[in-house]
Image (cartoon, rainbow over all chains, first blue to last red; front, side, top):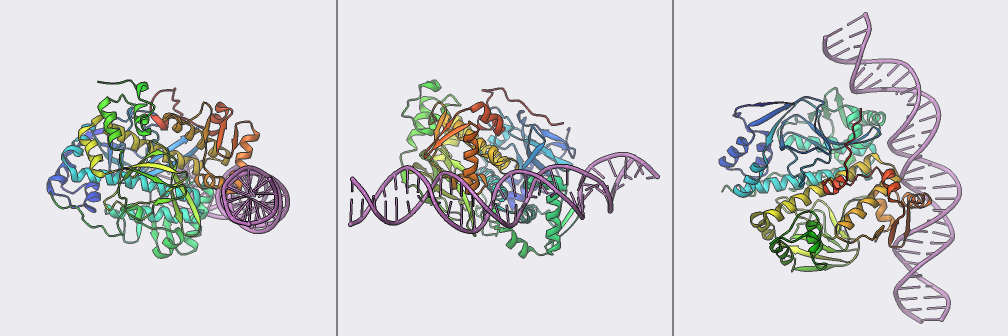
Length: 256
Length: 256
DNA sequence: CGGCCAATTGATTAAACTCAATCTGCGTGG
DNA sequence: CCACGCAGATTGAGTTTAATCAATTGGCCG
């Protein structure tokens, strides 16, 4: 993990786009949000930059790339708990020891911002609108993980895969990273297997099945959602858990 | 004035016992924590008191009894996302619409305290130690749910059940509700099945298997942990995700 | 051209599910 | 006090989904 400081971009960061897509942010708030992201790190694809049991040095905000929170249980079995996409936090809340309960591994090259705990406090004390945004992010992460539990516990392989694809499509869309009906998809089928609790062989067959049914197309690093309505119906997908809105991003908090 | 953890009165509420078991709480903090629990509700066993999609009216603190956060997907399938025990919150963080992403259902008669959003804000602004306690509770809930994902995605039926039993044993112990080597267990085998992503028939056979191996005994509403060490070894159970403290050596497993 | 990682396919096995009966403990109304 | 009803637990038999084992193929890069 190589660390370098960079100057402010003119374009809004993913976290600003994400929060801005749901709340009306004032210029001051956006500025602050951008200003706390100056301490940047680049993480190489494949790098496990947070180890289970080790101490969080700071909170990460993903600026670009995909990260997997995962648990490796001794005998080679692995479960991807959740995926962190641009605009997401790693280690926003920590326990008293700041001890990680999972590995965080870069699935692509990643750019992240390192946020000091004091800056998070500052948000809570001086930027109430942003603080409510953090609260929203927190409950959203929890709900995403809840859906993951439903997928793993009660859905078939085809339901799991189509549900995951739709979740990623909606989440990427919120930060402006989804195509009209496609997403870039950097995960290997092994990764998908470990995200969905399947063997890699079965993950492969499940991809093939969705393709055969005319629901998706996929290549090395893209998935095309050919028939979103059928995908939703197969997956039993309701996007409510992602926003808490009736699918319509609407500003509900006015400028301070 | 600061008081020792052990000197918390036995009449202190579960949430005070839980936080007091981990942080040194001042008398003022304990008093405040108790005072915000005056608005109490009784919830009858079987009552789904929060509906998926409906609005949270307040935050609940469970004072006694067990609650399941669960998702019911149209066709009769159900997944218990997580269990809330005495001292746990329901709806601590909410999204902008305060919309629940899951049902909350009482698995026993429950007593809960209703906390106004303004009191939660008050904690963050005036009781920094308690605020850090809430942050700890938040990340703990997330980590518990992460373990649930590992159970559902990557563990066998016997591993899942023994892991769940151990988790509940440790969590109940933290609030003084576990026996020396037993817990009260109000869930039906149907509930266990829906928590572990199994059929009820298989849940039953898994109970039988653990009993046959001399790991547990169970009756209508108790589970005895006959051989905790063997249970831990079978489950692959490491309590780190529950506390984040070094109460016990935490081996960091490295898979090469 | 190799080498390598990921994807794909075929064959077989195993874990868990479904379906269908019972069985059991317990509370209740007569 | 007892028969009845009922929810939950238990058991047996057969089926299904997904896992495992074992090659093979495909694409990309140095």
